[in-house]
Image (cartoon, helix red, strand yellow):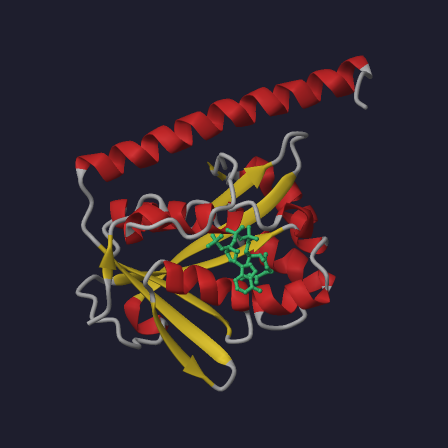
Length: 224
Ligand SMILES: CC(C)(COP(=O)(O)OP(=O)(O)OC[C@H]1O[C@@H](n2cnc3c(N)ncnc32)[C@H](O)[C@@H]1OP(=O)(O)O)[C@@H](O)C(=O)NCCC(=O)NCCS
């Protein structure tokens, strides 16, 4: 049986600080149709090695366009982080799939669905806790959606993802240069529901403020 942890702050889950580095507040917003163009821009800016780490292959631009075009916001949940100047610097894609579509590994879920998570952070925004925060947000959403297993697939050489997965207590299965990681989640409760609602609300306020500021700067020609 693999470990069961409570979503929330990753470090708090483990009851220990993971590093002494001060981390900024990261506001994670659920993305919608209107963010699709910025998502494409984010993915196209990933270099070959990041594309390999994110997609398991160096996806050419046309396939990235097709991938972004195919994302169904009514079925999957996509998260993003916008920086100070309203640039999308990170995208986390949480896709729900029937449990038999994902390698069972050590999972013994009784639910019909498992969630798969993939994430990328722009090179300029790494090391600020954004990847971990997106993962944490995805985990709480799974929990509140009555999904008890969060799955990630990545290259075994991806030391950062390995670190994030281990830090969360995920059960990791390595096979021929690739790794499958599984996180078992507790059922939802009022606190987990409230946490997700508040996080989304705060991120929405921040998003609207930045979007309006950006629009005003463009309109009045004051953008620097
Ligand atoms: C993986 C990725 C999403 C991480 O994003 P990030 O915002 O930089 O991650 P965080 O800032 O939350 O840091 C992650 C942790 O990994 C640690 N880390 C960073 N590089 C590391 C390395 N080479 N080896 C071990 N740990 C490492 C950090 O110190 C941090 O640890 P801490 O939280 O205990 O301090 C980002 O590097 C990325 O987009 N990579 C390319 C795409 C990819 O690999 N996607 C994953 C496939 S699903």
